[in-house]
Image 1: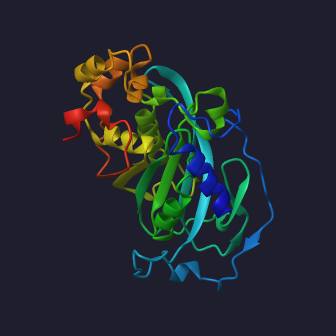
Image 2: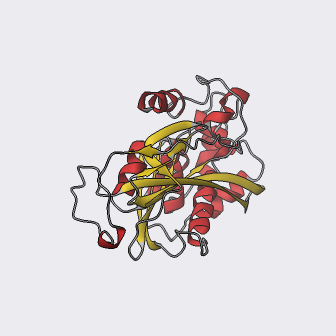
Length: 288
């Protein structure tokens, strides 16, 4: 399982827009395959009533919780793309020790994670939002998202529709033209998880402590949502040359300049962790 996900990440998230290393042409709204065989981690049973508070755990080690996982679709009206549908991948702490294996990508089973497991949150849990790399997938950095969930966090990661591994074969997966909708996906994901209603087990269980992180193009997304200003005029001028930088693909969409000028700041973000951010050329001094 680990080497398969690692291969997908290596072939997609770090590829340049001109490279299509992973063949395939699948829609983002794919119905993910089901797998019902239960998995037993072989761990001692835990009394949830006695485990409402997480014991102290080193941040250098996996946390005291097991990890639950679920996915669902949301549809929202994005600027430049009304009726946009994205899939959300959600991790959270659980005390379950048996259950169906988690499903990543299409049908890659993750036995260390339990699908649709019970929720072990006393009070409200902090939230990590993660944005995947160019032409990649929500579960790209599963080693990170699972780790935070094991320490008692809720983690949500959207599949950025049109810029995922499923679109690489049609030439869209590694396109930077998704730049104006990616940040909106993050705000829509926040709206979705905070809007969950009972009897959903995560309803009311998420605090207003929010960390946003992302890798590569997800790092760009992180900077944008955290409030970095786009140097639109300088960006446009720098792209008005024959051999323009690859980042200029971000401008190849009607109406994008106006959207960039408005910006994407979401004031619910408390901490931003951009990982090897790409496309920062669009911000220039705006990053400060």
